Picture 1 (tube, helix red, strand yellow):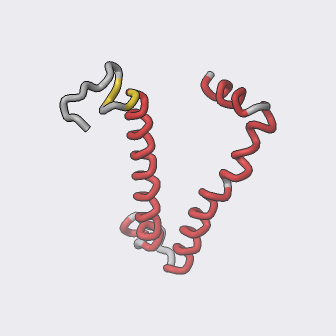
Picture 2 (tube, rainbow, N blue to C red; picture 1 turned 90 degrees about the vertical axis):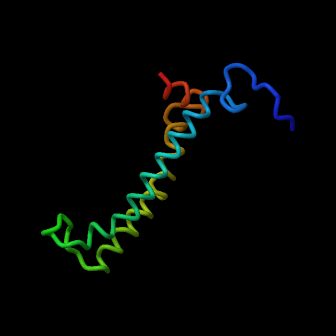
Length: 98
């Protein structure tokens, strides 16, 4: 690969400009989700005087597990609902954009 190759106009490092927006949006979404997961148990078991909930480890871990399961399970019925209610996948995307 040549280092003197020119990138096409309207691109960012050889990729469409919109891809950088998508990348950073997805990066921050994952950062906040996994960061929140890391701090959830610490918040739940911290003393009430410190701003926590003062729960025991078992209860806090159960809530954490339920939250993590809900994140993945709730999207399953939600994935097929729009196409059943609105119609074809293309119409769902067009409806969501408007």
